[in-house]
Length: 618
Image (cartoon, rainbow, N blue to C red; front, side, top):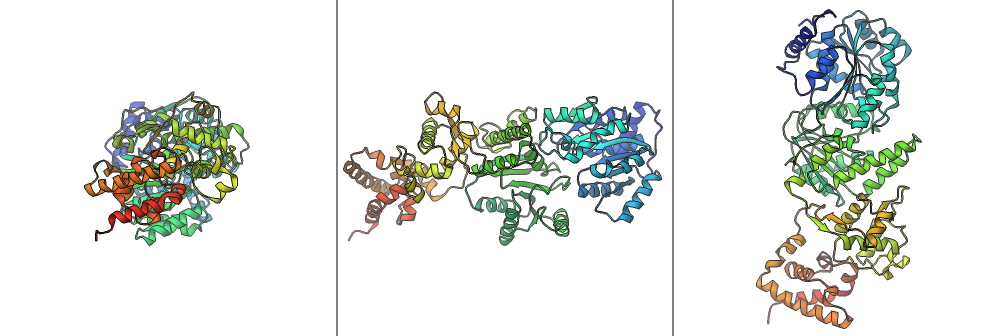
């Protein structure tokens, strides 16, 4: 169909009617969605407009429809070549004269595209900020009837945002170079500070800001602490076989290894990172976009502008860089409105690495580093949320909802436990060992591990050595991680991961504060060990008989050492032994409350009793 230009004197009512007609005739939609219509109206009225709208809510339509109604040329600033090509291709398929000029095309193609622009044949021209802001391009565009300028991914212009791009800075000159021309700025990711900064830079403080809400209720949110290895990744992917999704990894090396591991397990996975040859990246992206059930394993180099509607999941194998980055990345799932899943794995090492990345930024701007640390703090707080996780996410962006019913916390409410005693044990151990060691060593001391490092440092003689042997390493990691998140511990950002005690931690250590923690941060499948603990209250007659024998042995061992019986083993530990009936030292090590020292000191006696009770009577 032919897109008719409209005279600038046409009434606002007429333009809005034309916008609705174009929406139907060109794009096939019967009505605008959400904040689309007020954004279009503002642009048609000649006002600058910043639209903050969720991924998949149709931001691009705002400037595409407005530009066609206004006539002349609309210049669209886009950060990625792939995004430009996709949008231009989609517009052309809809019958809209759109072009792009970029470095990925042959010079002859760019020349032909410019000829169409200069001849007035092109309605929307997509350019990168680098190409647009050259003196030659600006001078050429100033001779043409530019009626609208659109800046996509506008958060990149803000020095307060987490994805600041220096190339975008120069766009602040556009309002002076094209006076009277409305500017549309669009993003899915901007908190209040970032929104104000975008408006100040692009609009000089004038213009309208539309925040359409950040909620993507069809995406189920869940977070899980890492337990090591690749089992969690594989378990998640096996639960989503034959579905298309994105797996984000922190490093290029991990991207390659995870993609290979998934392929070896029958899951069609493709790697994508900036270190790959461009042809290989493009081929993998094309396969992901076209082949059903394909999985892209990628660094953050992949994703911006990806418009694949049937992505059913996004899995973060490492902690993202900020709440904004997390929100933007999970927003690539479920763009068709159907159910999707966003699952994150994270651990203390992730937090340390993210701190290191912030400190190693080249900006030299201490204020910016402080902001980035605060952004990371907000993300850690989201991971530790004890109430509705979506509510915590949206609150960061100034949006409010009630309980969502579609996150792991709402579906399986968090158990909060009093962890004051455990926290004081951690803090005391850190203090006694000189506030120089990382979480792994502190946990070894607490659990009474007989490691060379513990022995060499003499930490097997500190008062808290072995005091936490009745708790697993996972539980201690969770407690330490939550102490870090709550500000009771400080994680060294210089790269060594040492734990130190800030003033709030000193108060907790002195008993002037209390600490509650998420007892079920590590959500794992029920193992033989955990099943035994759950069944302990209802032991079989045989197990009860064995429990009595184990308690007798415990009393004897306690008497020999002059200590209370529970110091040797708790009742819970003996119930676990009676239920699981370990036969080897490795199996005994899996019993609740068995650390390295108790494995060394007591395994032989208890294994002998269990073996004797299992032996047939002659």
